[in-house]
Image 1 (cartoon, helix red, strand yellow):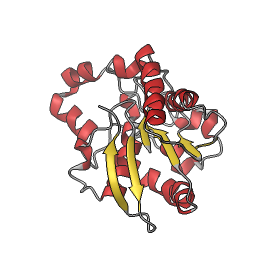
Image 2 (tube, helix red, strand yellow):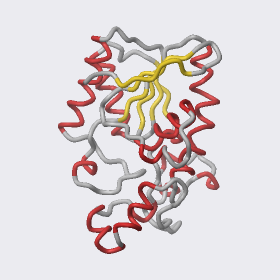
Image 3 (tube, one colour):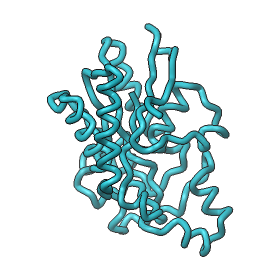
Image 4 (cartoon, one colour):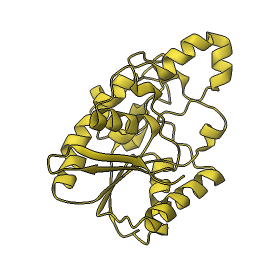
Length: 226
């Protein structure tokens, strides 16, 4: 099960968020709880959960698990499931940036496959090297900016090292993450071409169900709920 976090404060304010650790809105909290209600009503349960190290995803996971009475489940957190890093755009209003830089340029930064936004300087307080939660991540792996392609390349090792082995053990898996990190998983699992994956939308708070055969080939992919 893939679940994008509920609406965040900066989602609502139309601001580039990336690795900035913003909180959920009241609507985002409702979406997290509603996801748990829908999962429980549909008869789903889980054995292990994976999420990012950003609180909008962590809180969404906890809200959903609370509704399912599964707060006791094992949860593994990884920076590899973080949202795409938007570099120097983080904290900027999207509409105002489009007026300043041009809508075509902003569209390329947001929706292209391999175009990265302007990178952060290493001394910028927004650089992940200045955040203690990434202290154990090798400095060479910490992004200053990421394209969607970069994000997919960052997410996939975690799929192979942590998520896929759990599925092979027969465990039922819930992944709560972000629009672009989940796009990376969908691209890999469903074989979506490079040019088409930027258009794939992961709505906030709406679970996406994958079922696999014994070789981890998808046999079903459906959004849950209306």
